[in-house]
Length: 148
Image (cartoon, rainbow, N blue to C red; front, top):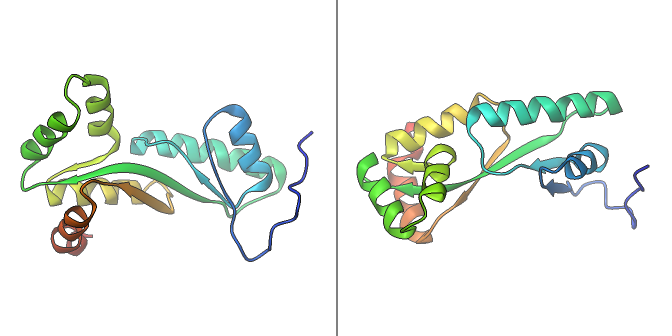
């Protein structure tokens, strides 16, 4: 049986939990207002949210928020972005393939499309991981936001 959180949190501060193990999912369903899942494709996000919604329903809970992280890398073309990713992670093909599947890597149009695709899943927030931070955020503001 899960124990209550002590000390009790303030009711106006939403509490989030991250993790995808069975125990983490149970903790999130029992006690938290939001759940941060691992980087995922839109199909994976949909399955994970459906699973969590079922857990919440069984507990008589609803209204959880969901977040997913993802690498953000914006270039003029998809090819340039992928090549840059490969330079960041030389000799790490599994990581590159995973980031290409779950991240936001590509042209402004590709990045916007991936964000809009996630919007269809019921996700509440996307947490971007980017480097270099300032130029990437400027590229996002100037080239992607207007597409959303």
